[in-house]
Image (cartoon, rainbow, N blue to C red; front, side, top):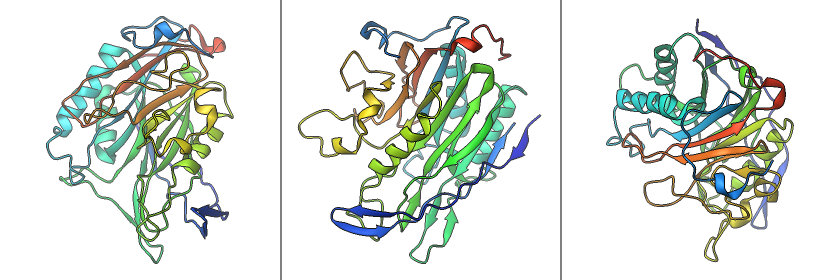
Amino acid sequence: MHRHMETERWPRPGSLRRRLGRTATTLSLLSAVACTSGQTPASVAGVGSGAGKADEVSVATWNMCGVRQWSCEKTGSPKEKFQQLLKLIDDSDVHVLLLQEVCSEDLVSSARSLGPQWHSAFEPYAEVDAAGRRSPVDCTGQGRGQAGFGLLAGSALTDVELIPSEQPTVGLHRGILCARVPAQGLRVCNAHLSLRESDAEHPEWDFRDDQLSSLVAAASTDAGTVFGGDFNSPPPVGDRNTSAWIWPSETYTTYHECDQKGGSRSGRATLKDGTKIDYLFTQLPRTACKVVDTKASDHRPLVMRVSRPEDTAGVSTAR
């Protein structure tokens, strides 16, 4: 059975922020709607992630490019995108998916098609104008609902919560959505970060540093957390990378990224223009990482397999 539930509500943060020498108060926190129906040896990064062992679990992140009016008209139909989801689940034994640019009704429909054990949680994007009015972003196409980001899991999701994060004063609000997956012993957090110059009123402001800090802080409350998503940012490497400063140091020290090899902070391209902007981080031991080619989006799915926390090893989950 699929049921509707609301994410945990958080108060609106009222802190002041400084941007390039200027201070302003930032509006934040999306309105919430949800529907549910340690370091690894460098050699494991890049290993294919087929069927895992009983004490392992695979998590994927994928920007589906499902909002057709956002230059996604030629990236596949909803049916083709669902087929890619199904292929990810079957070929890579994926138990949990972090999804961005997905339509609410497509997500609910996918969960129903996968079976009664599959559950989803969804958070809509919102356009905010100069007066602070919020408008949802509707997906084009009949009956596809609103545009947003969400979670899809082959078992129940609990403690679904929207994490407070700084958002543009005028412009598109994305966000961070976390939930527990008790059957897998995991907590997962899906983040879709703002683009640079995304604040129409203050284009010189960059929100990604505060958003990443909020994400890492949320992850730090549970050592069994896997977090990631579309960060709209390259890794903190290279002399010409003008946005390396946005990254908290903990992301590559306390945590390790799916495609991280040893001390390297680079990784394979996840966007079809040849850049990496999609990530999965965890403190759990990583046993495999894979970037999956697809014709159903301009982003490639990223799949990470990790060892489950010890107290859940051997838990049987219907899939």
